[in-house]
Image (cartoon, rainbow, N blue to C red; front, top):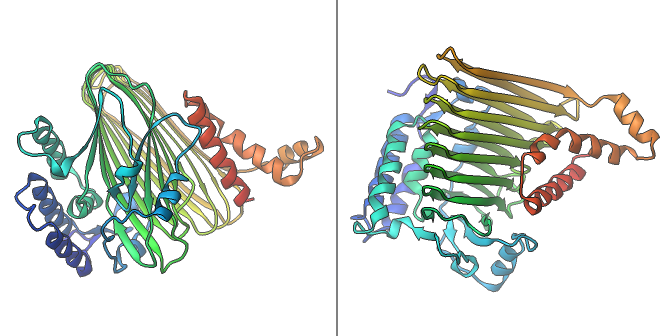
Amino acid sequence: MLPKYQVEVPEHFRALFNRLNDRLNGQRDKSFQSLQIKGEKGLFNKGFPTTRNEDYKYTSLNRVYNKDYELPGPLKVDAPLMEKLRGRFNSRLDAHRICFHNGQLVPELTDVNEEGVELLDFSALGGEHPLESELMKHLDQTLSQTDNPFLHLNAALCSHPVVLVVKKNHQTARPVEVIFHYDADGKEVIVNPQFMVLARENSKITVVETQCSDSSNEENLVFANVFQRWIVEKNASTDHVKIQEMGKSDFIIHNLIASQEGNSHFYALTADLGSRIARNNLEVHLLESHTDTDMFGLFMGDGQQHIDNQTFLDHAIPHCESREWYKGVLSGRSRGVFNGKVLVRQDAQKTNAFQQNNTLLASDHARMDSKPQLEIYADDVKCSHGATIGQMEDEILFYLKSRGLDEADAGELVKVAFLAEVFNSMDEGEIKNTLSERVRQKLRQIQ
């Protein structure tokens, strides 16, 4: 019996599971297959969420999971696809490259060539590989503890999981650019990429991720259900910049779980510029003292776009710091949601946590629902949170226009200045420039 705030999983998903199992014939004895079975069982036991579920109160996903999806076909890399995928990379960024098309690694466009960095196909690891049992433990624990049905869906339908390993004491010389590209090819397709980052003790890495597609209408759409697991060991430092530019009819649910050991740093910046419905589930668990966590986000919506950011920071240990700042610009009839929770457990004394959400409404029909939360059970802490929602002031626009700017340029300048704190959180110049260019392109579309 499902809880009243969940609904049963449509039967066409069971057909997808059966289809994938048929494709995996001959691999069922591999340990990764047990995660797929566990994911399928977990999903049907939990069901999909409704708006009666508090975490989905402002985001109805009925249209997402009620479509009769197909699985993407086998990877076929031809010259037109190669050209299209190459165009998605930033030619000015000196970086290692990893490319996925419809959830499958494209070897021809993947180049991670640095001693101390290793890219592995997790499903192909044998029981004798030292990483196999370690990664299985992390993933199995995640599925056992999560209430997120989309993690179970990902586990059940993912067939090409990949792990990026940064070895102990290695600091990468260049960032890693990762492209997740989707093409529905005239269908309604569901894709479940799984990507893990294992940053060993005293290592350092920067990952720049782009989620993008070529979908253009409701008969040709992608549902990307992404799961990423980041493991940040002692004294390691990881930076993760994600730019989401899916098609205007696409759905994306991006699930990322990170865990930090002592004296580590985890930085995440999420930039949502595309899709019809976007949902980000970002949670970070601070496992040992003296961790440092930064979570920044920017979102820009127009038309009927719906962008939902859900964050969870678990301060379970003393002497940890976290900063969280999400800012957005909404136009047309778009809607934004921010639901951020910082949990400070009883033993987490000397916690320093900051959380803020600010939204600029650029039209009378745009809407924002914001719910920053602090749940504190310790008494020796410094914690603050807040939210603002407002419109552009006519006086500022008048002043800028009096200095020679037309209305479009004046509006763009105000919006860029509003998002400045998010940009300024980044250290890497070329990555910052790339994000700035894409944000300005989006602004010109929603004037």
